[in-house]
Structure formats: structure tokens, C-alpha cells
Amino acid sequence: MVFSSHIFLFYFLPLTLLLYYAVPVRGRNVVLTLVSYVFYGWANPLFVLLMLLSTLLDFVCGLLLVSGLPRDPDGGLPLLNSPVRSLRQKLALCCSLAGNLGLLGFFKYWNFGVEVLQETSNQLGWSWFETGEVLQVVLPLGISFYTFQSMSYCIDVYRGEARAIRSVWDFACFVAMFPQLVAGPILRFHDVSVQLQQRVHSLERMTRGICCFSLGLAKKVLIADGLSLPVDFVFAADAPSMSAAWLGAVAWAFQIYFDFSGYSDMAMGLGWMLGFDFCANFDSPYRAAGLADFWRRWHMSLSGWLRDYLYIPLGGNRRGGWRTSWNLLLVMLLGGLWHGAAWTYIVWGGLHGVLLLLERLLRGSRKSQQPDSAASGGLRRLLLTAGTFGLVCLTWVPFRADSLRQAGLLLSAMLGFGRQDGSTVIVDAVVRQPWHVGMLCVGAVIVWLAPQQSRQFVSRLSGGRVVVCVALLWLSLLQLTLQEQQPFIYFMF
Image (cartoon, rainbow, N blue to C red):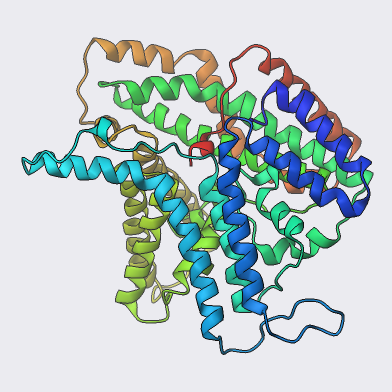
């Protein structure tokens, strides 16, 4: 089910809110869990069984981590505050990691592994099997998100950063909560554990949630979906001109940003409607002055997860330059692979890893230089921001491309080495249509000139801001009647 669909907006969401607020407070997590299973299983009810398996696995492992320990005076489960972990606790954590990563690995990477093995065997002249003879696995929606989220619970309990939870319904609510279930943000258990037990419901939070949801819906429907046609044309073309290739890459950069940040705003708004306060997922990423700054601003819940649960445990930057470089490159490669089972995502992650390493080297060489003046510093930041956006647009190409060949054709055109034929004129005409150029201009104004933090915009609601949100909601609903439903881009991950 998609947030930007009539069935969600006019049926599922109103009924969910009605049921949620009709039951006593103690039963609201149960209601939220059940409606979340309906939401997730709408396309394929069997997907719910996988989520239940991951949920029960981590719930049991969490209890095993604290079993046998004395309870707190209030009867609550203990917090692991000793630096020593028993063999049982280590095995419980290993079971959680192996179970979740096993599910993710099988359902997300089985088909890719089969394809790689078949290509390798064909190049060696062997014929082990045909594609149709091997099991083909369907990728469940959102499995990358909820396995990371469920797995973080056991890690937090093991580290002593959160208490294990006694109610299976509360934990199932944490894993299955529909606002951020399919495309994040990735929640940490220690950030919402208190909210699962007690949270604030008020008219002010409901109003703020509706306004934030409206802003996200407008980002998705009015901007991201409006840029889909030129993006599709450019990335499908074999011979785009240099200008069309750049316009298509910039349009894709805007499309994926407004699509994904729009989903995050809608998830945050839905969370407020239900009494939860979710973390922000974006902080004006295209205003970043450097790749490291970009990753501090883009998909912050994933960046933070990879930093805290992978980069730092690997040693972070505490074990010398070579180990730091290896850790950084490995994390970015795994981050690319997390997004999708294809060589294009691995290349995308590898490019960002290499560029981050080069940036670290350049930043280290500048430490001994004199500080910039205010004027030169402002100009330097402007140039860094422009250069960073250009690099990000170049690296977005393999992320969006269907194959490395397609990515190579578009990158060649962007760098001025592409060929041109009769289709070049058609692609240029589509990309340069006034409506598409206008949408690019609107996106550029919002990205670099307008406030982008929806959380900040709705934090202090005034009559004028409410009117703006209501107008955007009305325009978005009107646009939904004129276009085909388009799923969120991050649904595929």
C-alpha cells in the first residue's frame, strides 16, 4: 500500500485513526500492530510471515540476553551494565545477527548470486544450469529496513543501551509500525522504547502531523512524480546530448530527494498523529560542502546505523590510516549493496567510498594552511557546494541506471564523450519542455534557497503555515486524480 494512493488516504488512514483512538490507551499498540500487518500484507500476505519470524527471533533473543539476571526493584527487566558478557548472551546476539542477516541475504541477494554464478560459468565455458532451472526469489517490501531495525534491538540490549522488552505486542509494534515500515527512517530501539510504553496524544500533535504529512505528499506528488518522465527518457536513451544528460541527472537527483524526503516527512507526520516522535532523515543534503558532509545530511538514519553498528565496531578511525581507509571503503560498499543486489549499486557505493577517502586526504593536507578570510571562505564554501552537487549527480547515475552499460553511456554523454544520432533530438525536446524545466527550477529553488526541514516548518504552526499546508494537500489530491499511482523509489530497497 502506498501513502500517495486513494485507498490509503481515504480509507486505510481514517479507519486506522478511528480504531486507534477508540480503544483504551493500553490497547493501542495492539491495534497499531494489527493494522500495520494489514498495511504490509496488502500486496502479499505471505510477507507478513517473514516479518513475524524476524520479530519473534529478536524478541526471544532479547529475553535470553537478560534471563537469569536479578530484576530491578520495580519489577522491570535489568539493564546490562556489566562489561562482561556470558557465552549465552553472546550466542543470543549471534542468533539475532545470523537470523536477520540470513533472511536479508537470502531474499535480497539469492537471485543476484545466481546471475553472477551463471555469468561466470558462461565466461569459463561451463554450463551448470539455466536461469529457469533455479529458484527465483521475490523480494519482500521493506525487508532491508525492518531487519536492520529489529536487529538493532538485540544489539542495543547487548550493549546495555536499552532494556529488553517484556511485551511481545510492544516489540511487534516497534518492528511493524506502518508509518516507517517500508522505507524508513530506520528506528533505533533505545530512541523509541519509552514512547512504546508512554507517549503524548494531543490536538497540537495531530495538527502538526497532518501538516507535515501534507508537505511530504506535496514533495512526492507535485515535484518527484513530475520529474519522472524526463528522468526515464534520459536514462533510457542511447545517445543523449551533453546538456540533456546533465539535465536528466539533475532531475534524477531532485526526484530521488523529493521522493524519499517526502516519504520521510509523511512518516514523521503519521508518527505525530499516533503520538510518536521519529528522527529526521534529511538535513538539506544538496547544500553539503563535501561528500562527508553530504552523508551527514542524506538518509541520516541509515548513515547513523552503519556508523554505530558497523564502522565503529570495525575500529572506525582509531587504528591508523590504512585501517580507517579500509573500514570506510568497506562500509560504503556494503551500504551500496544494502540498497540493491546489482553491480550498479556496488559501483555506486564504491565510488562514494573512494571519493570519501580522497576527501580525507585533501582535508588532511589543508590543515597546515592559513585559515580563509570571511569573503574567501564564503566563496570557497559556494564552490565546494557546487562541486559536491556535481559529484553527487555523477555518482547518482549508476544508482539509477539499469545496467553498467547504461550508466557508462550516460556518464560518457555528461563528460562530453557521448555519441549522437536521430534520437538525440527527441530526448532533448522532451527534457526541455517548459513544464519539465519549470519543475527543475522549482526543485532548485527549494533545494538551495527555501527552508527544507519540514520538522522545523511545522514546529511552530501559525495560521499562515496551516493554510499553506492545506493548499498543498488540496493540490496534491487534485494531482493524484490526474496521474497514475507511482510507488516510492525506496520501496524497491
